[in-house]
Image (cartoon, rainbow, N blue to C red):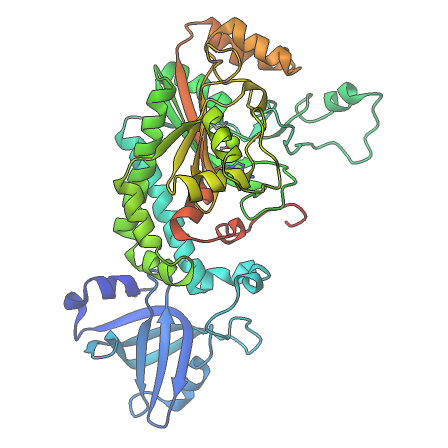
Length: 458
Ligand code: 4AD
Ligand code: MG
């Protein structure tokens, strides 16, 4: 269907000025009067609508009538002309209704609440809000690939079906083809009869396979869906989310922190540059001062604090936390948010967490109590990155696994990386939806995904 994108018209108006062009799109709003009708048309290529001006002396009234309904799909031919109010508009000569939209179309109002829109996820992309969310998500994804590609990382596709629970938190979704009433004497026998002949699940992280790839390719990154059967019903947890996980050889914790900061700033800069319209929109609709915040993030240093010191700061804060703070406790969102929002007022790397609250693969520090790990916390959200130097010592790695009662036999290929030419290496995981929330000011992770998967809701 030959037509011109509305974005193309708005970005090169001089080129199309006074030309007769064909556009396609959906009616966002409309107005009718005796001699004229007006339609705001959107085709998804940019946030801005194209105003159609229909003079009834030029277009047959019978053609106009069915076009005047919110949600209707149109193909329109007209002259692209400058206008005082809209910059440019289209003087319509011909209209074809591609798809009518009856009165029970739920998006009749200009603004709907996000809660209401969550009940009709299949129609959300037709709203300005979600058009902006998915435009930034797209730009962000592209910027992420661009960053790693231009820095010499190889993009790896790690398996989605796997036998290893990387984070060891027991949050894997099971993958099975066994009939629901399969009979078995014990767990072993049950899984032997299953598709893979062993217990399988959806990956919670591509890291372990990423490490294996990095151990030959030097530096790699993954960017794919990860799954967690977490029962945390919060605004920041989804059961299916996208994770970006670089893995870098010959790199210690200090180096990977530098990479993470440079990477975050670089992708934010890209969005600032390429999503002006969307950021203006979110600045208005989601978070006042958003653009100022992003400008300040890319132009100042992130803070760094050791876990032990962070615990002292929290204890001396005079705040009543729901979860009391003691050395050795995992930091809860309320603690993370106090540190980043009230104390440092900027993104912070909290480093050197107690080994007991972190995953098995993290490098033990010389103190024998803490690990070379860091979380990047940001105001408004809390953790967006989980990061660590990996335990490169074969014996120490095995000891950490045994301490956690992990089935070492299931991890032999991973352990081999420490046996055959082990090297210092580090990596991190960034949650795409979390950074998207931070960049847009969108407050609920359910509003960053086309079809959010959360506990109790498919
Ligand atoms: O801190 P996590 O669990 O770290 C890992 O998975 C490591 N294997 C990463 C690595 O070193 N390669 O998760 C990493 C990030 C979190 O900081 C958060 O941004 C995001 O993934 N994340 C979630 N995002 C949405 N919903 C959830 N349920 C999430 N769980 C983690
Ligand atoms: Mg984490």
